[in-house]
Image (spheres, rainbow, N blue to C red):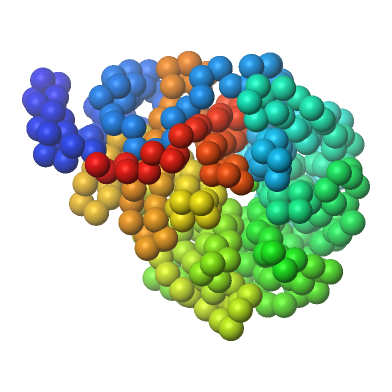
Length: 388
Ligand SMILES: [Ca+2]
């Protein structure tokens, strides 16, 4: 142990921004052992802040959330949460052969699944979406304040106009998974362009991305036939879990979760061909399974939420202690890791940062933790000189 610590300190001095593997991390990957957490939290205290800093005691109200699948920010700065109420996604929730929700489990969530909070206090100002959804997943808010939701339980995508509670657009046939132009299979997320075109990540079974016009007409798709292509292909995706559109560059970035990478493709909003591979933002394996993306146009950076791994994170030859959130520039340069698990969260149990969102002014970042039933607020991302 002493020798390991010497190595750790030496590595820390050499790298200055990283740490080597905590001793307890070698004892298994599936759960956070007490020994791992002790080591992890001890090491974390020596880490420099490389990004947004958590706002303590936010929200200042007990929200009693279920599994928090989605988070995004309204145009006025209010925070919207999409959670699963009394439902949880367990290993036996879906039929493994058909990918469908079995009839015995087609019971909608009776609690309000959508909760709107004030940014400063976390006070609830609205809640709705009861008796509508089965297994909530993605939440995206466009610049007009329309809500875009995915329900992996019904294999559908919904648009709810700003200020309303009923959808004006529904894609997919309820409880009928599929892979044609009108059927989806556990769709995960939506991204919306200023012109109303939108993109759907589909999802847990199909590993493809589709583009639609604002009235729901299919405009294109890619990544559908992934098996056998090999992971070396940018079109071989394994659970595209989150989307982030960068309109300035006319590219759509995809969190290719199980391949542990973030890839970007031409969005086809201008002269480019939709779906053509454009760039790698996060190379495979650099930060573990990538769950969420949030692009901040104010700073031209991408915030990336990834699984808190018990293994060290390798980055360009350096070893990092596992964070839950990371910042990258648009060339794919790593700018810092942040969002480390806190002692109180460690006591609560495992963590999955399932979604991440940035406020329109770029000042605040939110992380939805599906296992901790919580939303965390981070601020001061304007201190962007992370590596100084
Ligand atoms: Ca979201």
